[in-house]
Length: 435
Ligand code: SAH
Ligand code: SF4
Ligand code: F3S
Image (cartoon, rainbow, N blue to C red; front, side, top):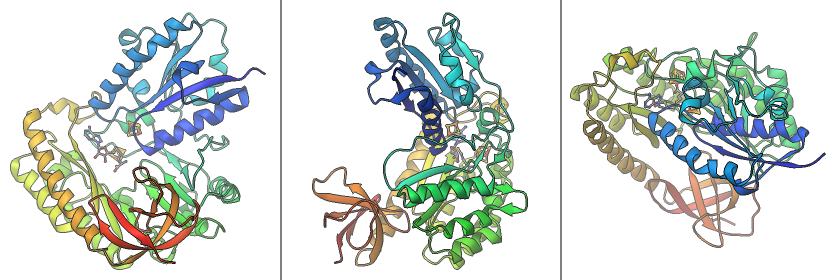
């Protein structure tokens, strides 16, 4: 069988990165090898995101650049996969008529067959959402390293009014507990040390009577896996059982990404997030009591339709009170097809930008303060490899999922070692190994 090369660029969230590994895993048995060089590829794919308009604009610009590979080397196939393919299934071929393939997130299984279809004159489009597709039987082609992503559930049933995900990823569905545990045992045997469970509402995971807490408990029993992390949990699905599992399994990271979005009850209600700010605050209290020292991060949207200055101030003040370790902060972007889209925009780009800059500055200050408090402490670092910026240094993550860099001791990726923190910025702890 001739080897053919596939080049994939990935946009968006970790679930999409995991889907790229899935796509490569699907193609490998059909004689495809991944390449990092678009100019050498027979198939060029952009695995795309639709969460904000900005993400989509980037992809369209990139497509315009990549199309030259088709003109230079006839026979090269150019395709779009993922959430933006699903979102714009109708208009995409008008905007980018040179596309050969348009595949939504539930259509990857058909990819090998589509690539060998005789008639390549017509673009191949497959965008049917499939409420049963979990790809549980497909082995993703994972990269080297200490960390393995494992998709435990796909889709989302929450329909927050601003969000495109339920429309492009379809309904919630989980992989069976048995299949996941078999996968994790295999990963441990291959030498992976950290498992990251993925799903848009990962803690809504369910397999019959088994919930996400069961999955954590059972995973903690797998020998060789040192750390377990998961993203993104939804605050409304953060049950006592899951908190108990986090508290009782030392392998589960002392870190949680808990998207807040906004801290005004009026805005939260219009977003249909399913919790009040008081309920969210109580949840944080329970987590901090159960898992002492737990690091928290969040997602915030500013400029949701109807967000008044007082609503924004409530979010600002709440962030100052909770003191997240870090946060991903976004300007609201209206997404066609969502409920909030019909409400239009009530703020200018400048005003949204001002609000965004205000909370970014606040969060930078808090992140730096929290990280500086760890100076003098010793943290357990799971080593990932050489540091990116300093020659001769190693980088890894602490149990709170903070990036730690320190001069190399000759330790290897996958080893866990104590490192004393000597200085810190908002994003990195700088340390020295304790021998
Ligand atoms: N499932 C996760 C979020 C997935 S999307 C959850 O419910 O928490 C990641 C983040 O993108 C969201 O948390 C939100 O902060 C942001 N986001 C989603 N839709 C957006 C939009 N229309 N405009 C701006 N940010 C958005
Ligand atoms: Fe989007 Fe809400 Fe689902 Fe998260 S929970 S993916 S924000 S609809
Ligand atoms: Fe984007 Fe799709 Fe993820 S819209 S954030 S790539 S689920």
